[in-house]
Image (cartoon, rainbow, N blue to C red; front, side, top):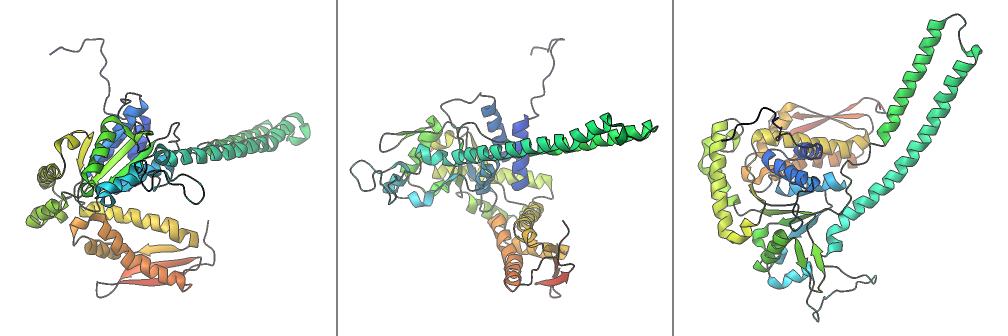
Length: 441
């Protein structure tokens, strides 16, 4: 082993770059309990940003295997929100709709001479296959157009504020400095304080102006980047598997009309529930090491994670060919969510609901801890359902009742809604408190 030389400096290779760190931090605010998967995605983006990525490969391809409701689809949605500002701006291929070989024509187009070959719709526009270049890139192109429009608007606002700033502060400063009548005779210290106040206020104003230029997404992209979600790939026909294999191996696909779609600037997320029954069996057979204790004991967590990974890989190898599995950058086994993680997800879901639905109504929601614990206990009865059952319980115990109150006109501006657990311990009771007709800003 060669010893480092005296003039060598050890480099830090663990700290991510700025863009990768920002992406990772954003993903962690939405996806809980899957940190290693988040790190892999951020690392792939870092390689792309450094221009070290191979030109004949997609940016990142991953097979996400795990039970329902653990964040597999959410990964695609969160990446879409980060890059395009919309969590639905990605191409979703529901593989169960392609269980028959002939259904592949919806993806690549029908062969020449067959019904559906490059159809023209009622507006006279060509109906493009799902995997055509224009279809894949449309979300990124739309995001670029929106960013350009926002840039123009922000530039105009910035220029207008610059002129206003000069008019307000520049003229006042010049008058104060040039006109003796504006000063306090014989009070140099007081005059200096007034001038200092002018300068401090002007600096604050300029900082406000600079904030305007920072309101564009930091992820504005120069070339179309696309995200493709292949949902429940095990339900697709072998013909679809062959198409996917070609894309993740060579990053190109030839359509039925001879056009070529390039995928070298795309992220492909494949999801599979092939191991969901295996995980459910592991949890049910080991109650002492099961769901509720996954976040409490590190040794038990590592033990059951190792078993889940081993059994999951066995299940995947039964469903997919070795050459298909070997093409992925990573095969990621999403582990079941612990009760602590579900508690964090509950907070995120509630915060997003309040921000999007109650804040515009100027309504405040106050919830006792007992209510949260009750809903969590209802949502952890079937751990194999993950966060999906939690969202269902939030709808059942919160959103449905709040919807009724809104439709009856009970949610007026300035209303505080208190949620408490009923005396039976099985119901959520709602109480209203009127504070004022208007909410403070």
